[in-house]
Amino acid sequence: MLKLIVVGKIKNRSISALCADYEGRLRHFGGIDIVEIKDSDPQREGGKIIEALKGFRGKFYAMSEEGRQFDSRGLSERLERDLLSGGSAFAVGGPYGLSDEVKHLSLIHISEPTRQE
Image (cartoon, rainbow, N blue to C red; front, side):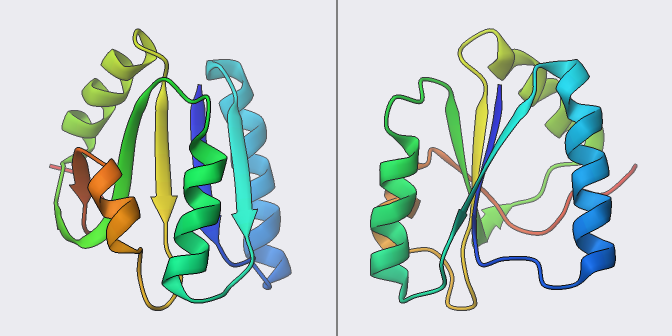
């Protein structure tokens, strides 16, 4: 199971259609649960992110600038291992980032998008 918790909503219809297409493709690999949280301040958003994680038993990744980069293969291998232990959840904050509380819940922080090597 893959869980994606994001702050904000995609407003561009073209990008939204691409995301829906990709979401459909992921169904073949165990599916994806996308939780959209309304923009607010990082503390309120953090509370909602933590609420969305209740009951999730897999590995939690915070997308933050303090994080590290993974190449595509490394991230893929990590996600494959995560499938054996409950899946992966990713939190993507709003324009002011993630609250410290959310960052502390995550053992792994990822900074920039992965790159192909």
